Image (tube, rainbow, N blue to C red; front, side, top):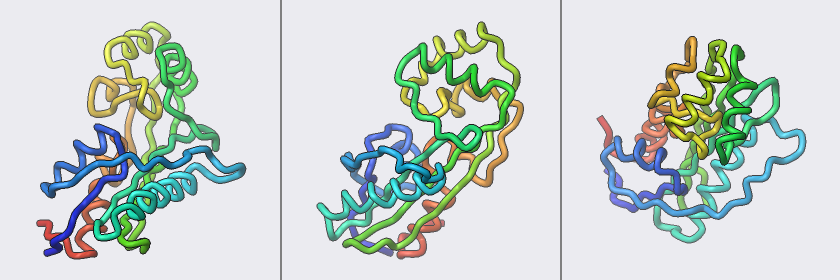
Length: 193
């Protein structure tokens, strides 16, 4: 079993709650990384790069710790979708996704002492049902998903917005694919069931 410090390079309460499920004590720290997309970079590549940069930034400050960095990007028709930030943008974002299939790219990177120990990529497809403006407004007012990529919380009432989800990891859509995260941790010696 690994006897070392574990740090989540994130201030996301969603990622912290998910990582807590694995039962290891950990700290969470802001990675302070510029998340501006690079021109012509695919959303999947952006998620992978940012997860690596986040983990590396925190690992540079704590060379003895294992650091987990993660990033999620939503993609509609090849274009990235960000977090809405407010009610009006959430409503417009959901309206633009109604009746469509949206890809969510999640990346998790494990770093220690400047060395990338592993990177896991996950892709989840969310098939939105046709949504009326009233349904969207009621949902947004109920959950206020302003800090969520795609303007919904699948772990809450947001699940009612979908016809189906195609995924290999049900936790990925919430923000941290635990199947891949657990695999990365096991690979470096963390004792998991």
